[in-house]
Image (cartoon, rainbow, N blue to C red; front, side, top):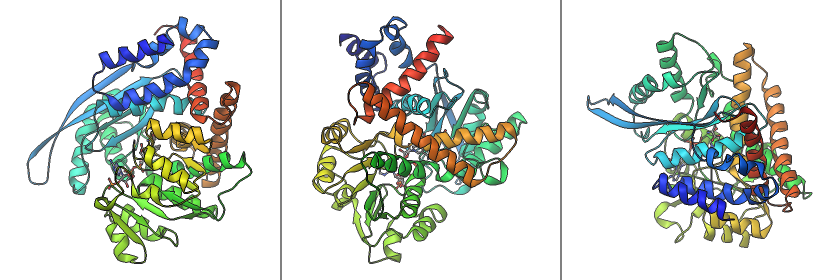
Length: 450
Ligand code: NDP
Ligand code: 2IT
């Protein structure tokens, strides 16, 4: 369809050098073809042209002082992509690889993910090229304060509600919230992922990982299978990976891997979750420490990874949970996984599989849960935190977890029934993209040209 091609060419011309954003947009635009053919009104209202253009992009300077008294300057971003369904909602990423294209891809994905949850939240994302690694607590605090000194004027509980992502966890949310409260003199639900001591929701920390496992279960249930007794591989070793592993154990599965930017652990007996939490959540150390404490586990450093592939995907498994970062699983990895008998991929990370890897999974017709569906539990639980803040109540862990499980089932069923409606019942990429888009597009049409 030349129409979609034109939009894509327009994006490349007007937003140069944003490869991750093109990748995310190309996948969605490709999925939308059958919908656009069937329902010309989306074309008439130029919804695609509108939706690929963020409503507002905020780029700012973050100047702060390190422990040696040296001035540091970083870039700050908040891309408020789409507010048709509710306040902009999405995380903040602090990582040296952050640039406008990365934040834009994450914000774009977030629009459809949030729509798929069925909850009243728009899409946005932000962050900085600040690298928290190796920084003292005091430095992280000063950076967060400098970041919020600009961000505060753009956000609010009914406007834009940031949360965590890579490099932003409970500690950073605490410093960001403290500064927001100080400047505005308002104690309100402007961020999610807050501490349980002052407005956070039980279950939020666990939600993305737990949700990715619930999503896998839903895909498998449709084929009469379960995770019980199955060996699973997980990449990453941060928030999403840790709680994916915890839920896999609840389900009787055996998670055998974790990874970080320096290497991979293969622990045949099953990952020692207590040790992993101690090293990653408390001590913020490398996985080499895991190996030191558990020499029976194998440690594969980056220098020994297979050529053009990641060590973690060479370990045989029934189900794989990519939970680190974008494009961490390429076509070679996908073929290795399939050759080793993998039957299920549930993406905790955002866009972890390259387009060629996605095509390989779809062609094999295994259970493939794309990130914008499989990792929607995190943002869904953030919305539950917003609801609790607005009503000045807090729900029990059981209540939150039950709601999370129901939401993940509904995300799965929506993606699956939409895939079926458009003639490709096993293609949850198509189903998730069309279902998410349709909800946002219909809301945009009803709200007129704004
Ligand atoms: P964390 O910062 O807690 O952990 C990130 C993990 O991924 C770390 O183990 C990190 O290793 C590894 N990693 C990050 N970047 C790279 C890289 N370029 N190469 C190799 N390894 C890397 O982040 P989260 O667990 O919160 O996020 C993981 C993924 O899940 C991201 O894609 C995020 O967007 C997505 N996500 C997160 C949600 C949430 O609620 N937190 C919700 C939905 C999706 P190292 O420490 O060595 O850098
Ligand atoms: O990618 C994501 O969905 C997140 N990082 C969580 C966003 C949120 O607002 O909780």
